Amino acid sequence: MSRLIGFVLVAWLLASCATPYGERDFRGVGYSEAQLEPNVYSLDYAGDGHHSPSTLTGYWHRRAKELCPKGYDVTEPPRFISQSSAGMMAGGLIFMGDYPAYHGTIRCR
Image (tube, rainbow, N blue to C red; front, side, top):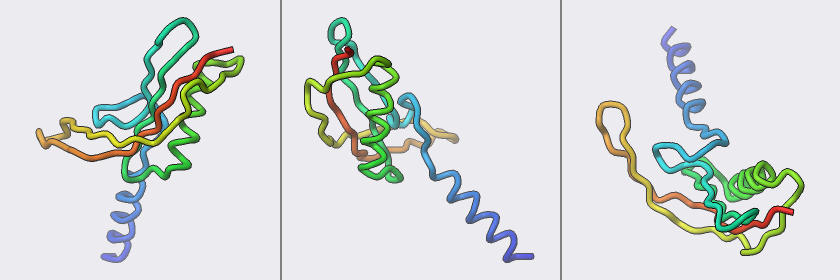
């Protein structure tokens, strides 16, 4: 019985580690963009310790395709940057981290 409880606990912990694609959350993880001019966006996708560089790159391009369904041109080559993040969690604890982010600028066609 204790093995089953241990297995369930480990499975739950591993499942809770995955951070899905989405808009920037309270921890600073996810996408954000700023419209610089009509059809031109500065786009960031910030990850956490569970995002690989290839995942960040894929998520960045996914958001670019959502913003520009007819296609886009990269006007500022995307690059990896590091950013600090802090937020409130349950119980009033503060979570802080140094996360990688993928940043670039696009122009919609």
